[in-house]
Length: 282
Figure 1 (cartoon, one colour):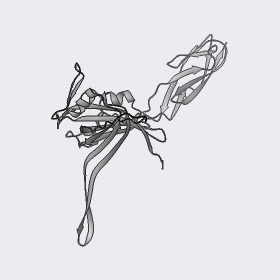
Figure 2 (cartoon, one colour):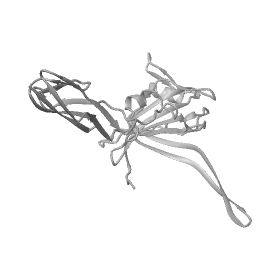
Figure 3 (tube, one colour):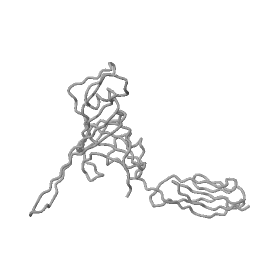
Figure 4 (cartoon, helix red, strand yellow):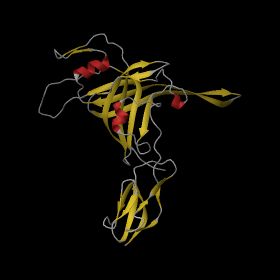
């Protein structure tokens, strides 16, 4: 059993949902919200035991919306207007509060575990409440106020094929298992249907042949072939020679005799290595 806790949160972004229907789930380009210091999620759930023949026979469970609280720095007025359905006039620098226009968003952020695994999160469908605000007189303390965003997270209408054609609330990826890049994950909103299978991790490498004899007056080259384990693993294979003055090797594994002597050709991938002993005869 691996014991760990969660530590840290950063990269708080949102993207407006353009369509959430039976046919499609589409979003706009993600944008930054504000610096984030803490995010909390509480899920409304209920369980009731039903009795039959004088025994507790079944438990009925239901799960409701998630309530998310995000403690952030001051949200810029243009962003605040966008996420809360208010109006911002950039030419006038004017933020106007009025009867809100209802909008749904996806929100993303990253956290990590105490054993240094990064966790990437997209919450698929949320609505922001207009945040409360506190302002007070300045004094000789270092007090300052950020904002607390109250967010309600619900399930999508759209059903995702990757999870058995059911709606989703969140897509969370452990990057130690699936090393998707931060740019790819947060560049667009990710869903269960857009996350690719994790690549198979390379656990070993073999090279053939393991020995080769070349001659300056005869066979001057030898093609090496590297195989990764397990089957299906992918990675970039690099070749190096222990002595380029005796035998050189190309990026594709072609060994060429240069001068009489011995050299070791090493094939490497993801920290795994295999070698071929090369002898060059005059």
